[in-house]
Length: 113
DNA sequence: CCGATGACAAGCA
DNA sequence: ATGCTTGCCATCG
Image (cartoon, rainbow, N blue to C red; front, side):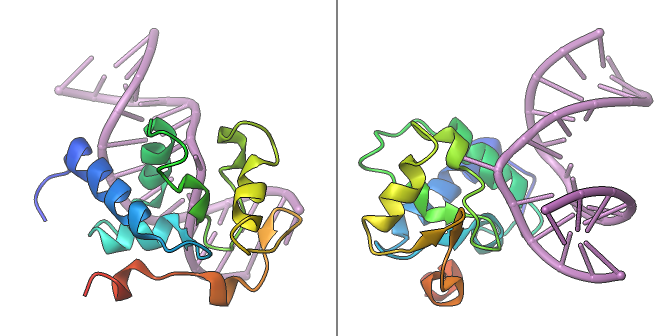
């Protein structure tokens, strides 16, 4: 990997996010690793914050922290929007945390075959 | 659940 | 350029 390029990094993030299957979710760190920057999970979060896609075409709600917690919920319309989007896909969220996280978790690495 | 530590680009003064 | 602070984070204790 060469030097860090913000544009490339952001685009790589968005590409992976767009691949997350409906009903599944992944984490900031998993995305960071998948695009070759294993220690830049926080920057994945920044990329998400600065993303400006039509919300019905970009599944930002499928990105949570490593524990399955909806740490980015404050960036949605209201405090329950992220949870509602996930639950509409069959994901159970209790106390701001995805239940059965182990199985809901989608590993981007296995998809970049 | 909290705190400390690690990681590192970006923003700012 | 230089330093300091911040950040939809992670891991460990």
